[in-house]
Image 1 (cartoon, rainbow, N blue to C red):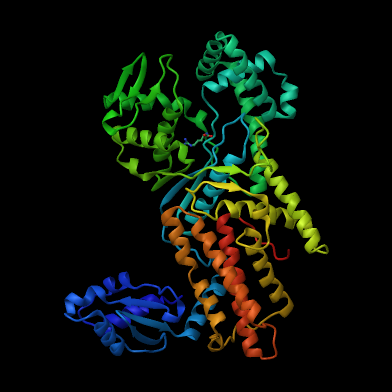
Image 2 (image 1 turned 180 degrees about the vertical axis):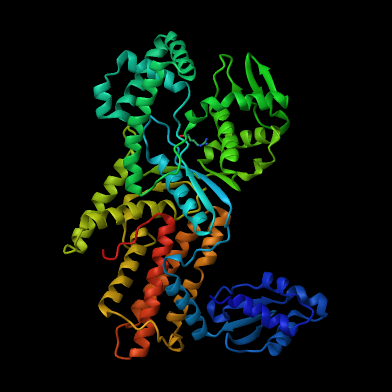
Length: 566
Ligand code: ARG
């Protein structure tokens, strides 16, 4: 695809000796409204070099630059030179590129040969996989796909919370009150029940806590019964989580959870001892972080058992050795900001110069609207139930709007789940937000179904038109405002993906695809596509095809499917 910004920069650099290409490229802007052209070159900073007023400079530059095949004209406007690209040349360059690249449009090999680990979701076993987990799961999945598209070699890790003193408690609870058959049938709900019972009972009988600690110690020491029960809890939990991952279409390369590091802890503590950063405090081992204005990191309790933070440190060291990552990303709620700051600092103090290759990508809270869900006291909102409800509601909507649609079940799943995912990814990730079914599932407004519907609409036009002649498209006819606006939107996809990657922000892609959908719908409403004029029809069909492809590729990066009919 032609880089028109580079064309503009070259046109200036060729005629204005005093300026370097690099510097020109950096200062070129996209004007806030399209009447002012496609690119603008501000001349304000040049006043000193040329000893002239910026508007004079703009005037002179616009007279000097040559128009040609790619640039239509340059006009002075105040202190700017506004550039207008040649519309048919850009239409050809963009539409050809999208159609020839197909599913690869938007991808690059920028990150080739570099390994990036994306850790996300990471729920705690034996605990509900609830609405709060959706964010890490969905944001992480999209970030992984975006890095993939940028050519990085990605590894996805689900750092399951499958270790820690709570498993001592669960083992005690199972032994005292658990019926394995009942648990097997409804694992998470039953385990949660007896876990709560443990806490109630332990308030009356504190010795239970000691018993739980003992069982966790036994587990760490490899005791057979403790291991068997723990493994069983893990297996039944994973079956439940697996159902949600299947619904979301998510797979992980590794399920190495916290337990995976249980035998890798001594080594970590050893390094801390060698570096003399470990201190005794009331029998426990800590790393003092006062100098760095943080509370101490508790590494090992007085009974020798390790902690969440110890396992995170061990996991990072393992990952560096095992994968030699270029970047190690953690998609984890902002409530854990301090935790990550602390242990990234500990890594640094341990002498690992790659500590800065670890990155915490935080996100804000999700809450539920009053009345719809979750409000009854103590009721947990299972993610699986939310997704099921989204699919059910979508089924109703589709049955009403398009009762003759084949495979309604499949489409309802794609749209219902897609809607939830899209909504998750539509805002800056750090923002808190309130989940609303009605807003999420609307076919209008800025929602997933709206974008999916636009894609289906493009598919429908192409189906109705039958084949079009891809080999002889005359792009010079695609110069009407709606057509050119759409072309310009399509052109931005590679940049949107690169931006999203640089910021770890999937919402750059979701906002982008929304702009494409809006531009397409405007074009669609103002123009007939299947018309007698073969030349124009053919060119418009190519534009529709390129739009279909761009929307599909963008939604794929978000983890959202693109049904062809809905
Ligand atoms: N299991 C933790 C939780 O549910 C999240 C784990 C985040 N990842 C990490 N490496 N600490 O809160």
